[in-house]
Length: 89
Image (cartoon, rainbow, N blue to C red; front, top):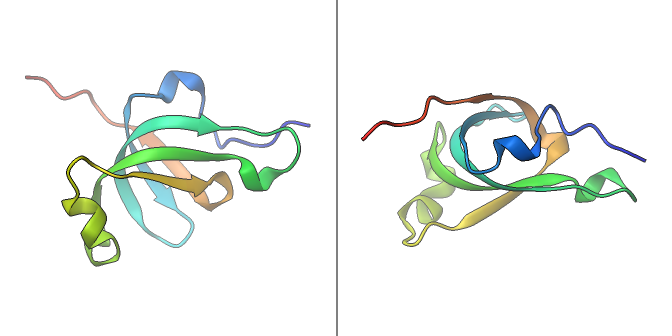
């Protein structure tokens, strides 16, 4: 059985994305990995590095960590996402 990955694919790994979650949080991230599962939807998700959020108080410790902490979210909590332009040096 295949589950809805909300448009995420392997080509998004390593890219900067702006992700909107179902609770209204909007995060700028770098997508590290997709987690997929054929058994049940609860193990389908994304692992990402949090770069910026509209709720910094929620992630104060994470945003100050060096090196950055990887975060994981179930795919069902993702409302939408967009690929951000690559930064130029």
